Length: 342
Image 1 (cartoon, rainbow, N blue to C red):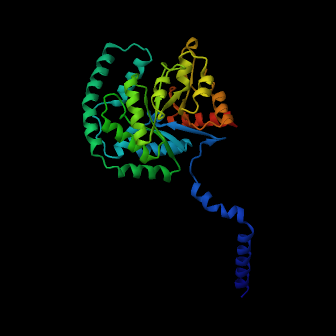
Image 2: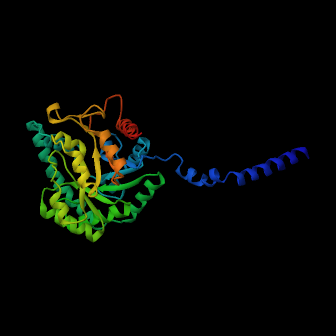
Image 3: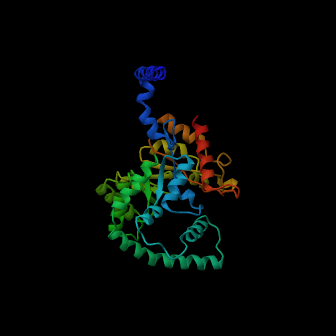
């Protein structure tokens, strides 16, 4: 009887406690829902990451990419196309695409390729052209339900996709592929797609008009060819054309007016890549954050104070130390942002 009385007393006190602690317990479902999920929204600034940052990781599957993002503490991303499309059933290439990216990046940076590297790059590009036809045929009859599944996979882990970057928007892609890319981005929940600026006014016009049709914005990415007026033509062509600005490359190009550019174009910047690069006189290197010339703290502080809406996207391009990996380095970049915005 005593045990029963103690049980009833404890139960009644517990019930009373529930009614007397509404603030904490009413929030409990939200707490439970967000438990063990990343949050990289810092003082109003959405810190994101482009999944290209994880290119050095051995497993490049969609499931692995989601794990990398979550372990990095990132809650919103610019998603490269390949992991998503392979999950959806896109045929895999029979050549080393990553090697092609490495050689192409080296060439774009003005480094001299050896004769063997030049031949290797030429062979990869030839194979890439044949593969593009295979991919185009697959995209023409894709099952879009797989992309709905992808969105749920990200949502379940507390991660949103704000930008999508499949290789579907180039000058060699058909309008059908462009439509596919924009429709896929919308299903994934992205506000915009991204691509390298094609340096062709006719093509940015086509993309802008198709963006209007599909209600999808297009962010044009630039490297060291970026200037203060680099995007002006595309912006005038369509309200759906915008900037996928890269702060690090802008510094490496030797420009001194980046803050003015951000202030002028903030309403057309869809997302911004952040990395720490050196000025030309210091070598243009990609360095661990805080050791280069990109004014990262000033940029992040301005985004926060001015309440700009675009995300700041971590792009890991410096050499990953042998004792580390890409996930750990993205974690360091995110911690830099937390301290800068603290």
